[in-house]
Image 1 (tube, rainbow, N blue to C red):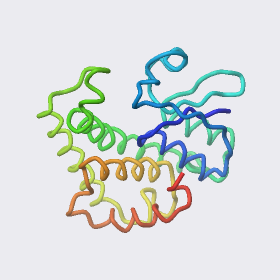
Image 2 (cartoon, rainbow, N blue to C red; image 1 turned 135 degrees about the horizontal axis):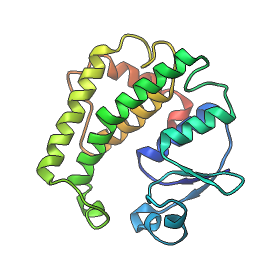
Image 3 (cartoon, rainbow, N blue to C red; image 1 turned 180 degrees about the vertical axis):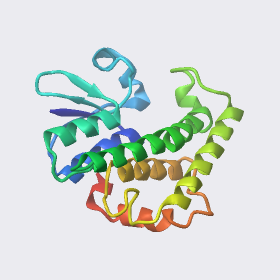
Length: 203
């Protein structure tokens, strides 16, 4: 297998999942700042132009970060980052979906429409800068909603899962692009420290 890697939170999610699995996968870096993901061979392999993507040994390409993580779990079930029972897997997938739609999407689109606008505007349509500010506010609201629900060490209680990986990578990215963790959060700061201390966080 080969991972097509780049900067940004999406590749970080997959690298962290690979590290948690203890897997070794060849890496090819794609220069998204130079638009290499939207030209040449890459756009032929990955029509969305998104990174990362995983090229399988038979040449097939898998993209979308949660799909790649699911595939890694299927080919190497342990250590589990999604779950070992139907109930655990359902719980993880539920929180991944909530975090992805409720926080990651508005946070990322808010960034693209504002600070990231010079890079992204020539590549695809964006909401207005005013709408971008509203998306950032929605993302922060969703983080506080999540913060108020959480009780255990991790999103799924005592299990470290893909939900934690997704949330951590996007919170770290948000903090670097003008969307810090909301000041009113009480559970998230200690959770973030627990996840940041894992070796995989540096992947």
